Length: 425
Ligand code: DSN
Image 1 (cartoon, protein in one colour):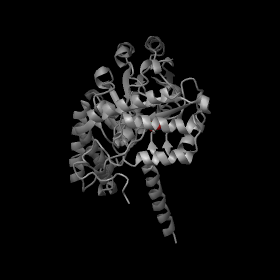
Image 2 (cartoon, rainbow, N blue to C red):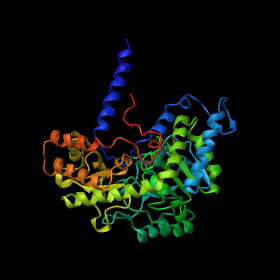
Image 3 (tube, helix red, strand yellow):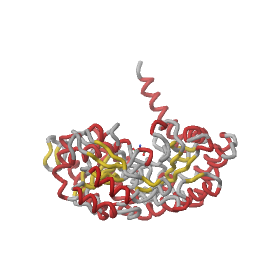
Image 4 (tube, rainbow, N blue to C red):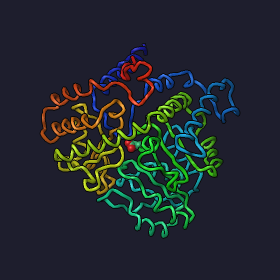
């Protein structure tokens, strides 16, 4: 009697796959994993428990899980040049909460970016920072260059004497001033934390910035945005934070980590060792090309005087076209998938109807698109939004453009016979 529901789910998955297959996927926080990674995430590891550390588990049956976890730790330490690695958090937000728990107690102050300036919700009192009882003070921010105001922040740090200086963002166009603000962190005894969720793949590819070398003590992150792993979290740190972070994660916030995702992560780490530099390079080239092409077609792309972007992201003020909600809805009808986004001048209460849209080039780059295709993507967006052409006509051309791009590049799949990432059922 209930079998129909099982098949309903399967049908929905099939339809979703087909839709994504025929879409230009530009959400800046997503990516596609290779088939090798997907095979690992569908493995028996996903049925098992392995609380504790490799070689010292509370469960039996962990021989091969230990092998994979040790390999993943080793690969992560090498790739990110980190003294300590924790791969257990199931998400970036839990990774952040674990770091807050390790470093601060309720009532302590943290400085972070205000959400409309790009801060992630887990940096805010309404989310993980508030769960830990932290008071959050925003960095002064320069809206024109979309950058943290260094002089203003030095003054603010001296005034508020935070326990944690948190860098990193969800709206993240340019590197953050770690070198510039590290001295004032030392002056007030603050620990410097960097949320690398959006740019972890660019960091792995030695592009953007190297937070642990530029002044961060701890990097906290998800691992499925520009870093193309299965969903989950990761913490990288200097050795002296190892015990506090380990305890905060287990037994603090995580009981069993997700072992199938751990196996997929190990493979993604190997992929990024091999292909990360080429991948990160192309992501940034594509983001710049997309920004330029949208700008030339009349869109108000942020930071035109600053080269638009140094990351995977492109941010556009679409208030003249009806705002982020209207534009994202219209584009979805044409199979162009991106998200509406608060811009720095939006009040946070406008999060459901903000002024902007945010585009990420990382996923289309992963399936092989280059600068030429970014021009075509910009033209399709223009036709749908500025020309107000019929969505069905634009969609037809979106599907035609996407047809040639079904293989996950920058992975070992190609050497193994390059099968199609959408053919899963
Ligand atoms: N909220 C996600 C984003 O930036 O899209 C990150 O968790």
